[in-house]
Each structure stands twice: as structure tokens, then as C-alpha cells.
Image: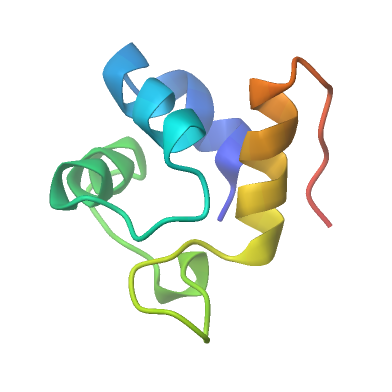
Length: 75
């Protein structure tokens, strides 16, 4: 997931949800917002192999950095 590219395209409600519920399964509206921000297509690589509907560890870490006013990078 290219969160640094998608993040500015997300509305504030979606960003707030992602920060407040980081690491939890995504709400359908959040998946829809991410899909829309990605030009209308979802990407299976966004999601963890271990839990349904949960973002990858790298995405979760990046969102945590944003929530903590850090300058996170994705590997």
C-alpha cells in the first residue's frame, strides 16, 4: 500500500478512523475510501496475510507514525 501517496487523497473522517482504529479490521466505508483514493481499485497487497481486513504491519506502523506526528517511512 502506498499510504504516503493515498493519504492526502483520503477525507479527514477516513484518516481519523484509520488513526483511531489502527491495526483493527477495516470498516467497509474505509475500504471504499481507500479504493476510491487508489483510482477505483483495491489491492490485495494492502492486507495482512494473517487477519482478514487488517492492513499490513508496514501500513499499521506508518499510520501510527502519522498519528504520533512523526515522519514515517514505508519499507
